[in-house]
Amino acid sequence: MNLKLTISIFFLLLSLIVGGACKSSDKSKEDSSNQNTEDTTSDRSMEEMDSQDPDEKKARSKSAQSGKKGCIKGDCVNGFGVYVYENGDTYTGNFKSDMREGEGSFAYANGESFKGNYKEDNREGKGLYRFENGDTFTGDFKAGGITGPGVYTFKDGKVLKGEFSDNGKTGSGTLIDGAKVRNCQINNRKLSCE
Image (cartoon, rainbow, N blue to C red; front, top):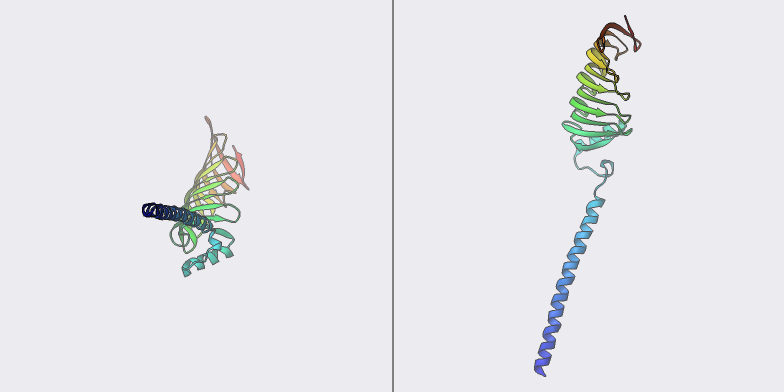
């Protein structure tokens, strides 16, 4: 009888220990699943998160005033980052004093894009602009607009090499259309050739 009682107590203790171990491993699974839930809920937008860095708060405040959606990656104040605007446009590149500065690329929501240099938030210097219709311009930009020497390539393969001003509204150059080469003028963005 004593042996039966000892065996019964042994199995009872064994079941409590094994059962407790199972519950404890289940609990750790529950804890880790709770942690996963917490991790996904902490995946919030920049606007929802409270910043501890005063410079970051200042940058966000400035961004909200200018209609920007937010910096989604990197340093969009003084460094390299990715910034998405309210209208869906996206800038990837260098920033200085919360402005586009240096090399960068801009993908417009309408399908157009720019890759080149910026100065004080404007396209400045060498760059490549791809228009929605498939045309491209490679050349100089000043104060955000097409100004200076450049090459305008039409989607049909024609190429206009020349000098542009007033954001491409005026200029002159040589149009190359296969074997034909013609001198042309640009007035109010209309091309007239000899």
